[in-house]
Image 1: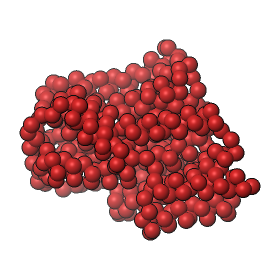
Image 2 (image 1 turned 45 degrees about the horizontal axis):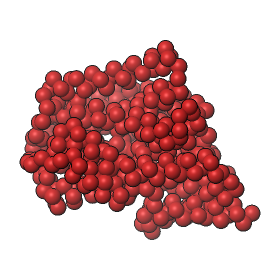
Image 3 (image 1 turned 60 degrees about the vertical axis):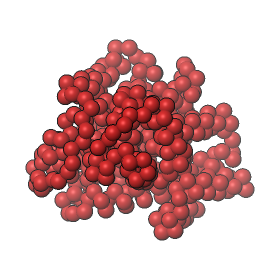
Image 4 (image 1 turned 90 degrees about the horizontal axis):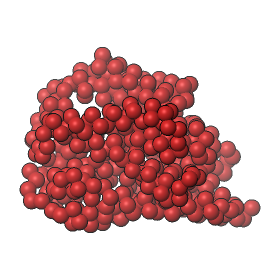
Length: 398
């Protein structure tokens, strides 16, 4: 159980340190959190922490950030949740915004080479993510089949709504196909809010998800359109941070707001910084020219993609005990998780592979990066940094 309360400032400083040092993606982040809050500070028991992780893996959005929000909430209420998010997110967001501004104002041949190197490394990063997710989420023939058909479907219907439809269909298939064991042993989580409060936050979540597209039509404006795009992405990303790639590609690149080269370079750099991969939204916003300063647009997009996580965490905590034992929900998620692997597989082909691997040197560089990540076990930040340097040197030497 969680006992004493802490000030929001204390929570901010704890998560700021984690945001500066937590490399390695969401699974690694959860390991850092466990070491910090279960082993070192004893804020939670192992079973209570496992329950929080289980809840956040059920929800769309970045699981590690949502776990941090929940811990901050239990320690210091809503301000504690906000402090935890700001501390964990701020370091990588600042780096990515500065990188985006640098690319916008200082583009040259050397930076173009760095671009190419980062895009090629992105191929290796996505393949590694696909391999790990596929082994975990597609362990049998039915789920491999769902993954394959989803990949084909979203390539044939290349839009955000095609991906949403694929997820919905896969959830229905899961309800019909899978019969998960209904027996689960767990400890109860502390309930710090009423079910009425939960319904309130869920109502806001669905109102924004449904209402923002209409609001964008009634009041056509770039900022409103960006808020709608990033909010929808944050509301629909099941399966981890890498699945944000195809959703954002449909919203940002396919609509012409940003070119694909800049998109993939930023995505690759996002692997090299600590903290949540969703801070990629800050890079994208800061790379888009608009009526506001680049860094302001970056912060707006960053907030928009994380708002669904806040609303879902606050909205589902009071209901989690019943939700996690619902066999129908778990059956649907078995299939949905396989479907998101298929979405990422489609993204590996288009736009990542088709825009990055166009000559033998590109393939060789991607292959070496993949071996470095998967077999040499080099840290992602090192591989990304090396890829950018090699790309810049190759461009400079030509």
